[in-house]
Length: 457
Image (cartoon, rainbow, N blue to C red; front, side, top):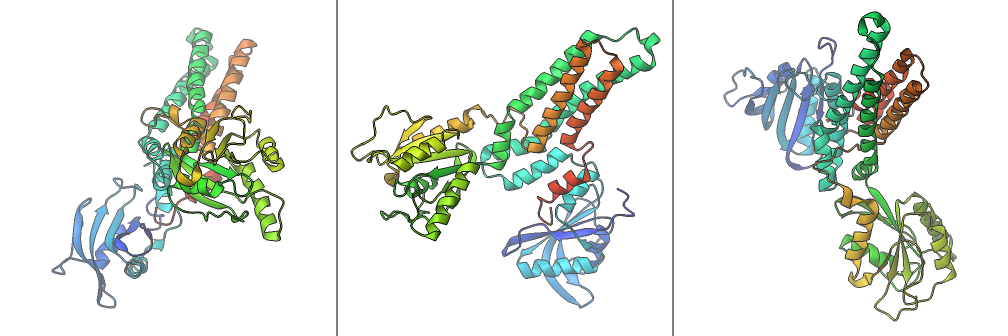
């Protein structure tokens, strides 16, 4: 980016509200001058800001002759900064009013308000981070479990990027050899088909391995939705409370207490889980209850895992049987609740899928249920410290596309076609892999990614 054409941007980089400290970030060619205009030290003498030194002083509104706050400030000279530009970060007291006043002072001194994710976008455009690293910053901010944090941190440290760059480098080397054979056929001594096939197979194998773990990585990143369903009064709300380890839902012997869904987050086996307690499914007696039942069926359709709760103290009703049939194609765990009472269900009854016995009201069997959920989402196969994971659907789509083009090259070889046709699919595979790290990404994709950020990041 040409610094002469770049506006200096500024924003509050910490959450709005009362806190210990807040950080105002400034990036662009006017950063150091803006800091010099509003910063004074204890003896009010001018400060020559050395890069990457922390300075103690005060923010002063010179125009109105008023001191706003005692602060710590640091200036980071380009290119040794997050954005690759000159950056200033001012740490002030964390009150909403004081941070807004300092920000307005910065803006009146020559900066403009940053848009969502603009600091990170400048870091990408200036080559400080690739697109996978940028996405990893988002994922670290939003991480809700240790495995998610470890995977995101590894990708921020270029674990996935290095893998993708290595695969692209192999293909680029082969492409260079093909083009050299096309342009200088007499001097090259012929194209080594066996070497080409070996390289393509190796790259395809490594790409397939990344894809094989893709669902686990995406689940780690985005979480998984678990729906608790069943007819009224089978213990769904008690089950939700037991999984959450606190009383979230009202528990009552009166059928139909839950008329709308309740959604809360939990952490099961290191995975971020969104648990939804749905309204009891039965023939509705009122419009609110009818809407609740309709909402329950929509949640069943969108859920990754269904916990179908049956009352073990009663025989199966027609609604139970219908729910068993309706959810047979879903990833499902049958929860036989109220097993402390006289059981009316035959233990050997084939309901399909894993069956867990619980007494949700006292938390009995919850550990076994959590273990079944962990098995179903494959948490036992995840090692966030060692395995390279893709964490986005767009990564998965790019890998699938690359594999398709690599397969086309094998077909071209098998058909005995001219080697110049190989370069077409080979270039397409290289471009697909490059999309992951942002080598040739569209403005539309960039905007959708940076829109995930808050202002100030």
